[in-house]
Length: 139
Image 1: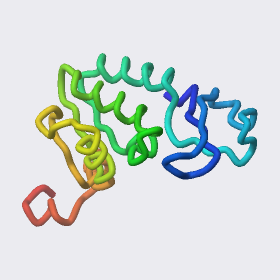
Image 2: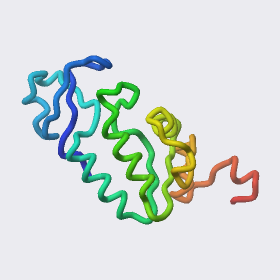
Image 3: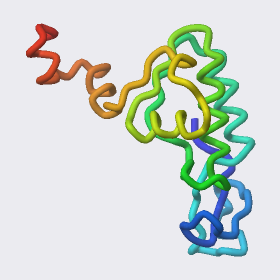
């Protein structure tokens, strides 16, 4: 699934002028070709959340936007909320994702697992050998 709408900003900054635009129309915003996407749009966030809630297992690696800036945190917050509603296993993977859910007011026990090793978690799922796990006998 890819975003269908994006929060486009004039620049990278907490107080940057911004608006929601279709993902294929970023250059049509008042910011033109220099506009930058700093979050997924509300339509995309709702669609992602719907799919997440209907899933039995979700591994999430990476915030949806620049969650550190309140104007660009809504997509990440919507996805995080949906993860708390999964009737199965929800894993938040990666230091940025872990920081995002905590900064946005979620507690660790609302998720099945939180890992600060996002890349390592994905490599583990791919079946790659991880030196730290090999030492523990997980060869």
